[in-house]
Length: 121
Length: 335
Image (spheres, chains in turn purple, cyan):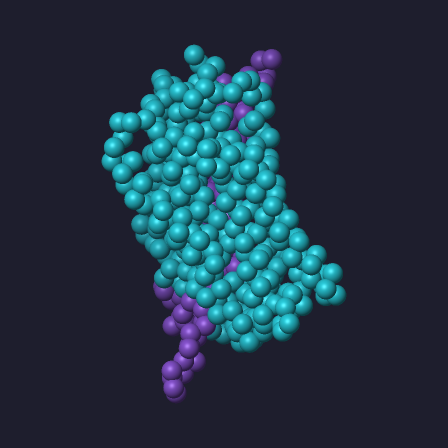
């Protein structure tokens, strides 16, 4: 029972920690970090789903003689996550560059302070 | 796994954003190790290069411009805490409905995956199934993702390059990594006094670049491919720029050239698709690129992986250049 869903539990904990960071922190960079954590946990979820116990990486190996055909893990989640990681870093960079511009415009990256500035003006 | 959770908790607690960034890198790297144990070698490659390498550099670059101290906040956010606990509890409850981890009869394993696993060695003739699924069966997806990266690269550049006033002078070409968080003074990177990083980097960088090329062109047979090679190449190059100064890096690969390469990669990918259409097939139907189908698939995969690799490298580098260029402007305005 414990080991059957352990990976999923870790995924949920990480997911919630990421979500909590995004929602509760007012610092925009901390929010971005939380978003990255959220992303990483989803990667873990997909890869865990693709794993087959006793399987090997999905790269064809020659079987010798009468050895049985090896079990491969599911290549499809790997493909999805592989591209998602690279797309993720690209979008993170976009977000960070927006943070930099916000800093230049408002002089702060704290969400509460920005809102206060908005109300003053 | 538990290390992962502990690391994440600390990221949440730590106030100094610089430390939080480093911890995020560690979490990413641990995750890469876990991916290896879960048989996802290709993914682990990417995660290690992206999470522990490029993203850390980008975060530090932002921190240099923004400041690393988070404001102290006494109140605990009750609302988000309740929401998170509720959602988490629901998800926990849902896991009991899920099929057990690692069983070969799970729904995930029985849908399209068996076809990929059984037929791809004969249909595509490429041992690495991840590569064949990525580049051939799901070629349209990958094309879209390459375009997303291209767009993000362009976007970062447009956002950060505005209001660029004058060209930076050479002696002000300094790097943000060693910048102290509060005073805003930059300590020179690429200067003469860091002997150890210089020597180590000189030794390592050729190997990193050669390794990236190996990953690129050996992606058909071992773990690897355009995405991984692209980020490894970019990481090696960023290391070079960090240690020796951005000037030297720009001398090797100019910003305009990077931009050109970024577009060239996408065009190469699209061009392969168009070529197969001209030859009478569907978009990205590699079977027609050579005399027999398997050869055509080989050629097609090689070409589009090259396109992906070029775009990813160039996009990462242009993002990096944009961040560094922005930091330079900050210094000049500070003077």
